[in-house]
Image (cartoon, rainbow, N blue to C red; front, side, top):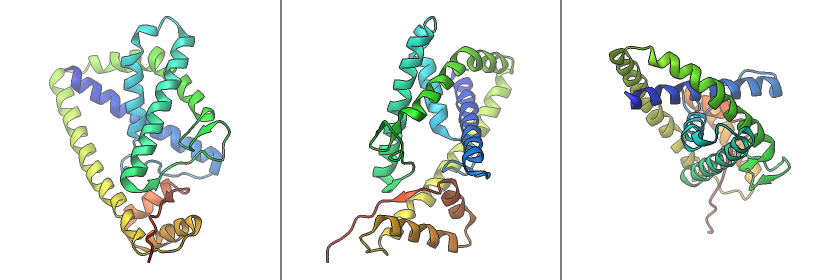
Length: 218
């Protein structure tokens, strides 16, 4: 039953990550925004990070300082890799920390990584024991049913959401201006003109989304 329990934990941390993003946006931009590129209320990168830290650093729980440093390192690798992968696959930069100090290629920055590291300590010392104890109380057959339903919903969400994001690439074929900022604004405006709520959902979730254009010479 461990696989089903782990998936439930993954979903829990993904939802908590989503809430963190929403609250952060509410604080910085004074408005509620449905963060994340998936339709549902979860950010998988948080779930992945939480499980990785839990597995890889379970032998360092007796040393909070070492645990913090290693957690920051793991979070940095995960965030950088996901940013790089999304940009290469979808030709789109989903977040950019270039305006912040101590950033690496705009993909990660120490200002964000320190809170992530502290969050990992919270996960390992408080949240993991709490949620694990709750999950262990769920009968096995109910746990299987719940995790199976959530998995199906999650997979469908991924398929639909990735289909929407993939279409962003199609906008590139219509644009031949050598000005990244203007091109990005054009793409967002084109999406917002449509009546498709899911397209608007992506743009509203990432107001600073950057579309990288591959310019073709005539």
